[in-house]
Image (tube, rainbow over all chains, first blue to last red; front, side):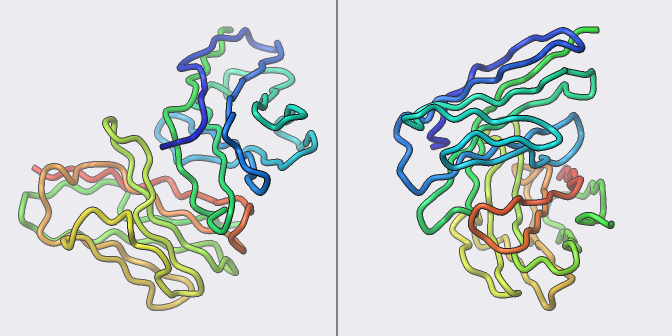
Length: 111
Length: 114
């Protein structure tokens, strides 16, 4: 049970922003939201994580809704190298390190 | 900086043979995780260690699977005897501290059991 809901696939054009949504309506107060991505033939790669506030790093931004029931991963300018499966994961309680991966969103970036 | 190193990258063997997958975590990391990825089941956690001690092996599918971490820089996942349904990509990951800290994954071992 991944406990999050994501669209199966999304498409974007190169150099345009991409907003990847995630629903986690049963999230508890101690759950973090993690995003990982997996490029073809590679292991998953950490993207970003957050608890309540919006977060930014060199790869992406994470916008968390005020009620924390949903979040959006934002890639500011998509490149062809961003084509991957993106996983939104909630992990919390005493088992924050136990990541449960769902099916994720397959992002296609068109040149 | 060296990332998580897994070997071999590919393994093809016959049913019934013993298979050993190896992992070298990032130096200084105190958590180590073994995952398995298949088309049917996706990416699932098998077992994880903290400071070389197995903490949770509830994801290990059956007694044919075993994992060890003899020291902070080496772990093995062993399947004996192997079966065709064990065919999958096996990933090792490590992190510094548990909680919410990022896990760093290796490139995986693609295992095919004939």
